[in-house]
Image 1 (cartoon, rainbow, N blue to C red):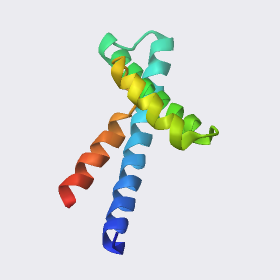
Image 2: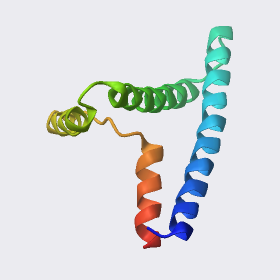
Image 3: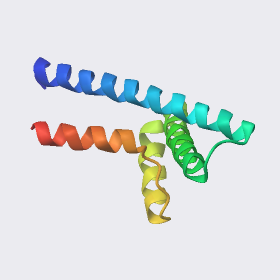
Image 4: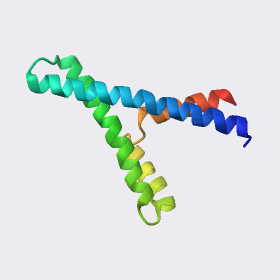
Length: 103
C-alpha cells in the first residue's frame, strides 16, 4: 500500500472521529433535555441510535483485546450476521465505502 493511500485513509478516519464526537455531544445534549422533560420523541430516537453506534464501537474494541481475537472476531461477526444482529457501526461502513471508491 502506498503512502498516499495510507495518508488519505488516516485523514478520513480522523474526520469520522471528529464527526462522531459532534454526534456524541448532540446525543448527550438530547439526553439532558430528556431529563429536563423538553426533548421530543424524534430527538430521543436520534440519541438512542447514536448510543447504539457507540456501543457497537466499544463492543468491537472489547473483542480485540480478548485472547484468540483473530479467530473469535470473524466467528462472532459471522454468527451475528446469521442471527440478523448488526455489530459494525455505520461510521465504519461509510468509511469502507469511501475507501473502496478511491481505488
